[in-house]
Image 1: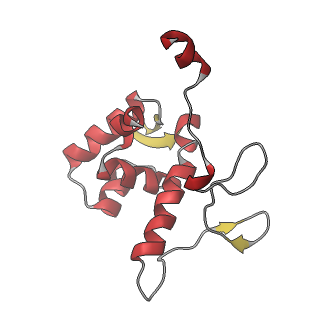
Image 2: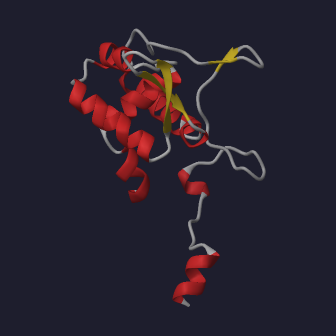
Length: 142
């Protein structure tokens, strides 16, 4: 978890990623959406590019301007971001309800994120899990 937080554990970084999943791609769009200082936004985008979460794509030559696109590594963060959104919707949305719903295009229903076992498909709760060291770690220490 600490390795992941070293990359993502910052409010602005998580909000930038949320906006990426909402198809925000350009520096000015991020700045307008988030109200973030240019320097801070530039630093966070540079870090996400350096970590391989985003890639820069040139969309204008003079002056050079770039879009920021999610890489495969970045797209793999979707369950993390969506789980945080749904957690906030559950505990902080208030009487008006969540500001945005998520519709599964394949079935047409609005949904909430659920953690499920990759092997049996059953929903997983904290009391259903027993963490244990991976075989590689056991070989190094044992």
